[in-house]
Amino acid sequence: MKPSHAVKDTLINRTHNVWQPRIQRKLTNEDARQIAENVTGFFAILAEWSQAATPALDNNSNAPAATDTPKDCHDR
Image (cartoon, rainbow, N blue to C red; front, top):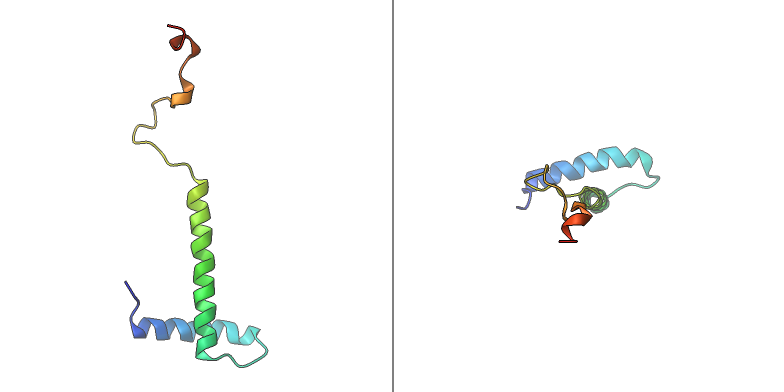
């Protein structure tokens, strides 16, 4: 779902307001759009890394993992 023009304009305005005091030159709306896009991309990558680092849980978390099978089961 793409954000509406009003949402995009609000995001650009807020980005401009946050970053303009930190930048030496005058920011354009295109500068603010690129900053917002880059920050969004950065946090999307952090979220992907976080999900990749978190092991997926089984539906039955009490069941032993396949690697936890006792050795004597293999000797039968």
